[in-house]
Image (cartoon, rainbow, N blue to C red; front, side, top):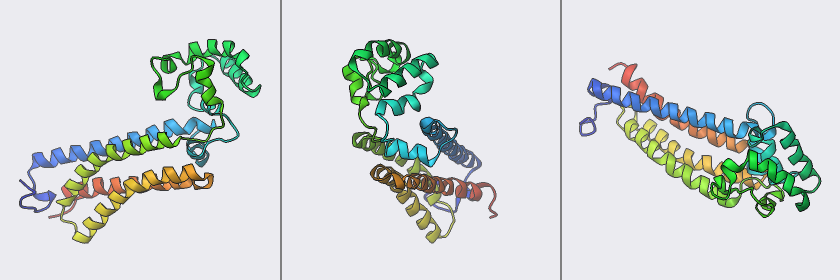
Length: 240
């Protein structure tokens, strides 16, 4: 096996080259899809096309001039209203102080527009919109992602990223690049995972730190690009 007698990826059998190439390409496609998912999730938050610093600021620090419910229906949840009238009625109810005696009308709207995901049984993302008591939690000031939500996301992200990163590092370890290059790329990749997650927590602490989330994401993207493109270069382009 090639790891018992390392001579670089160029010298391994063709079937191994093809297998490793497929793995690297799939990892790259997976990362691009993850990036597209981030844009699709956070892009609509400020009700403007594309993803911006404002989207990130609202997502992590919060739109503190709004309630959590208003931020949600103005962002990713807006498309789920059956019609514009239902959306506007909900906005007007919130603007009027979201009185409990006005909730029966809003409940009718939520039953049609939100019940698939936010019923007492479904509870997608832990959110229920069945009774006024359920909704009251989201009539408070929006302070962005909660600490418990950030802990959950951080745990999932780190544990989800590690296996893929390990596979990429393992392959990269058997290239013929100089040892200092391999050490630098591998160390940078490990730090990139932590930097990406740390950026979320910093953006939660202060609104002006929102751009750090983009820097953290770019750091992880650069690490993935290096671990994918450098082995591919040695496999198919670099001369013996």
